[in-house]
Length: 193
Image 1 (tube, rainbow, N blue to C red):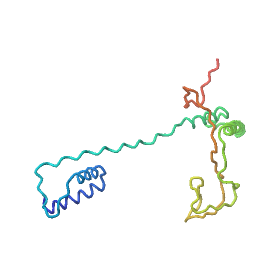
Image 2 (image 1 turned 135 degrees about the horizontal axis):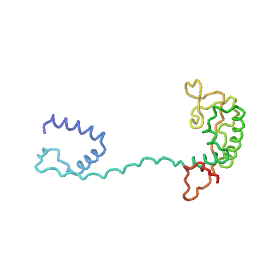
Image 3 (image 1 turned 45 degrees about the horizontal axis):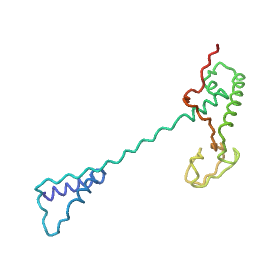
Image 4 (image 1 turned 135 degrees about the vertical axis):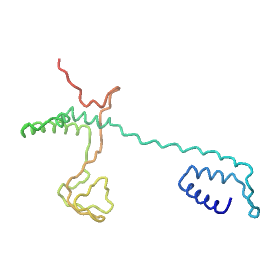
């Protein structure tokens, strides 16, 4: 092999090894299987084809994360429907209703949904301060629990007005589904006989 051909081949192999893990593994197997040549002996011409290195086993494919089950969310929605008729209220066309009718319906929905929420989810505020209070957030605050709004510039600490305390679910106690239960049924249809 001429110097130019070897140079081009080495250049191509460099990038192939750098960006192709399977090729790099095969090249390593070939390199390890060849005996070391003495420095004073010229490279022999290959008379026999070089045995092909065994293919390394491909890495097992990582499974894509499974989508989360909707069962718990649907169970909670069913509880809010059962206790407060939340789904009925949200899907109702309120364009023709007057404010007094909407207010009366909202009071019933609010009462029932509040009961369902209190019975099955224990909530705690993220911020202990009252809404409207001045608060200071240290540099490196937990952005998963606190969202900055308004004119956000630079790095913390930040001082501002607490607009919403936030909520964190401390405990969730949903009923266990019965065998064969279809969680997609939020509310059964009703037929009066």
